[in-house]
Amino acid sequence: MADFHYREKLKQIEKAASTSKVPEGAKNIGMGCFIFVFILLIAFLIFLSVSLWINEIFVGSLLMGIVAIFCLFVLYKFWTAPKIP
Image 1 (cartoon, helix red, strand yellow):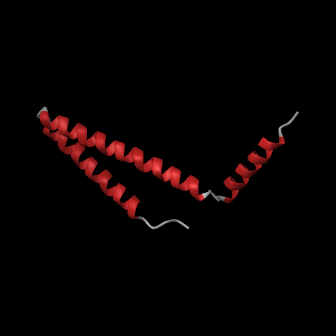
Image 2 (cartoon, helix red, strand yellow):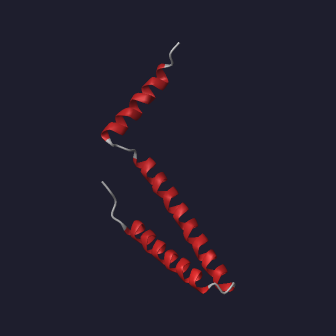
């Protein structure tokens, strides 16, 4: 026997994908996860930069610091961007 409940859900997903109408909650969750992972990346880059500086690998430390600052700038732009209608 076919389960019509799942068939209806599949139709809703296909409709949302074809009309690009995504629920607001899904947008918020997706952006929240993206920003969280981006913050973790920045924290790792800062940790790596400090570790390289302590071990006197100044060129690598400087490069990681520059990348971390660039990522902070990108995160700031994401955070302050206007909402997409």
